[in-house]
Image (tube, rainbow, N blue to C red; front, side):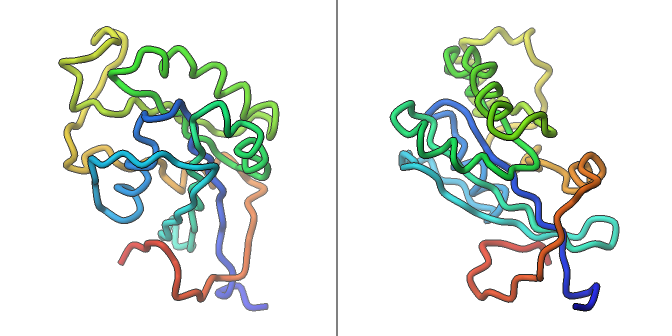
Length: 179
């Protein structure tokens, strides 16, 4: 197989309580769209984003997991093989912030220590925050897409030297790509 027929594939699990905006954040990141409509994730959803990092093709596979406890048994199975994690909490939901250590523990128990990013979501609602403004240094805003770079693929590649190379996907069903 030729080197140019290979790409780096990185599995990223996105976890946090229900209704913190994980699905909206992933949709924004992969498809560039935002919707205010709430649709509960049942089990797991999946989107991907292709990019070039250091002249290498990288495919981030973003696994959007349900945040409700009734789906725990299902979603934990999808953590396996993850090479990075995004922990998400909502500005207007203190319980989602307090649950972050529990979510981290669930991921670590399945896959061990992996690069992890903490994301405070819904910062456009900071005025209604249950979390003190001084707790976090936030930037960006609203639904403009500012700070919507969930994760820089290069950072994950640098942190995970045992990167997984897979055959390039030629599927017409790829979720999103960067021109």
